[in-house]
Amino acid sequence: MNRISASLFVVALLVSVACNRSPIDIEEPTIVSDEERWMASICSPTFMGRKAGTEGCDSVAVYLQRELNLMGYSVITQPFCLKNSMDLLNLYVEIQGDSDSLIVIGAHYDGAKSGKKYPAADDNGSGVVTLLSLCKYYSDPAHKPHKTLLAGFWAAEEVTLGAAFNGSKYFVKNYSGINRVQYYCNLDCFARKEQGTFFYYSPGFVRAGEIMSEIMSTTDLHGLEFSVKENEKRSSDYMSFYAARIPYFGWNDYDTSGHIHSTDDNIEHISFEQISAVVDMTVKLIDRL
Image 1 (cartoon, helix red, strand yellow):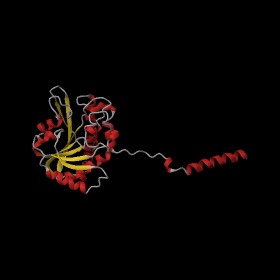
Image 2 (cartoon, rainbow, N blue to C red):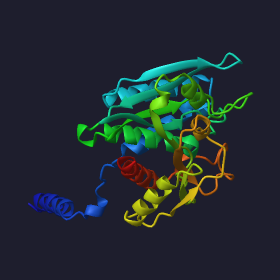
Image 3 (cartoon, rainbow, N blue to C red):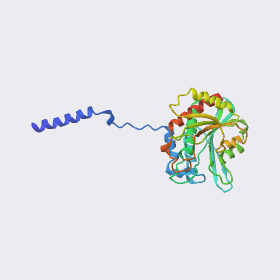
Image 4 (cartoon, rainbow, N blue to C red):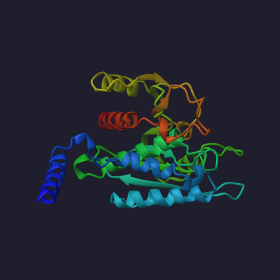
């Protein structure tokens, strides 16, 4: 009888412990957003830094097509070749709006260096992920834009052998509807945790700056640092559109000199809160243009 009583006591004790277990001891599943999943995928060692002309960069193009197809888009491919026989590929989708006039939103998907040590998260995983997020938003029929949008994923922005901004430059010169493009939105390097983010606009395009200043003043930015200014640089795909006299706007880190094109440009330094804020404010601006 003593052995039976002891066994029953142990069972009762185990049941009591299980029933009174603190919730803090229970592991909850980690919820990963689409933006985090996309960033982890395109910045993974599998794609080896996404340098233009490499197998890793070509594989990212396939990955982007698959993700866009899953959203319900038909992806248009625009192959081209540089003088050094490098085969490259622009990708874009058209999002039909109420008007046939176009706003192009673009991000380059290539990285500057090859190798597992160069994830190229901010430059330009931030732009690619934001563009995918905008595509996801507009894939909902309830979010049909006023103007037709074209989301372009540009190749070879980082290649400077006798040229620069190659993918966007090729698009501008060869897209049959370029005369319909009213504005260009550039997404490149703006999600570094340790940096503020500024919205810039092309010289003279003051209206975009005024609208964005108003948007920022009425948006809960959750303590993130954002500002607005006229652009003074000549360093990204917006130059291809500006050369065709198309006004542009976009987003950029306060200072990129310390981390881009380095091993330090990794996912640990990415602020997904900044990416979400940029998506939200870009949608609001497009609605008012």
